[in-house]
Image (cartoon, rainbow, N blue to C red; front, side, top):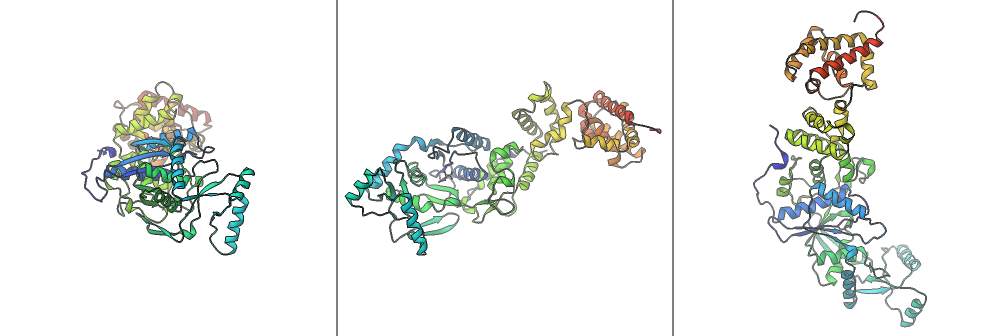
Length: 504
Ligand code: GLU
């Protein structure tokens, strides 16, 4: 009896100091500028698991300060995909675009504290500054001039110039991250430029807004991609200048394709939306996502959601880049589908075929056919998109795919003998169910002295018109005797048209 993966409840064995750390507050902070990529989805999942494992809170924050690239469609899509993955949030979604007052207030506090300064340099002056640093073999970091005279400032204002506000990175100095995955990472302040916190129109930059939000939302652990690690010391500096304490950080490794290049569309689906369209269900997708850097031991590769919540520990995430392998996802997906309880599989299948519009296009009986076909396809698929290839024939009158017809037409005499032999046995069966059908056809195969392929392939084509399909015996049973016999006769008639001589 297949076990239902999602209902396995395990005893809760405390395994880390995070257990029942109900104060834990983590967040997922996507920028709504596109669909949710595999990397973003993994970040969301890791944060969600950390929160659920500890009994803490998972906060959703949309970093939509890039007004040109952020869209409501992308936001809606990210929320939809998170729900599809089963990642519910406890607070939010907060939108940075609605929190401008909070950032302006923080910028004022930084000004009052003398932690930031007005920087008047033009783009050309900044380029020249960086070029000079490079020429002197120094890091091309920007340090704005801070000794402008009142007259100079008045002149620049008269020209219509407005300053940006830069953070005065304390020199000399260093900022140390005690990263939960990467260990101690030290940043020498000499390498960190006086980064901009407020643009000339007063709007906050990403580093300012993210730091303020993490403080203000009480985030005490930030799990995010390693590509953000150079932002971390800047955000820590801002938090400290505001009198706050930075959270714990865990920077998760990059995701590569199987060719060891950074994951992109070239590797097949790079977004969760595409994986969904490719016929994968959320459970195997989650399973594949969690294994992008995390492992429980060196052998377990399949986890239920309950097991993940129970076992997840961000400190077990590896530092090395993770590889996203579609083939592995396919294997996990096939394994997941096969292990589902048959009724649950049927529900998933019908729901999927309904959601994708497949059923709507196939007449009033389509949902019923889909449900009855579920046991015929459950063991044959690794993703739901394969359904039509196997079972599409059930929804249409007999018609032959070119390849399948050629197989028969190649040796018409043989095809007529095999199909005629099969028909002779099936026509006289009283009990048209799987076992008697199988017995009758196996017996006929021996009588005609043919191999399984020589005998059974024509039977398959005679009823399905396809060279790949659901299993022959199950398909016959599902068709029922009358429909099956009619299809056999139709095939024989068509073969007879092409028959030019000799006794069949
Ligand atoms: N909005 C950032 C991104 O989508 C996330 C920054 C963060 O997690 O702090 O990459």
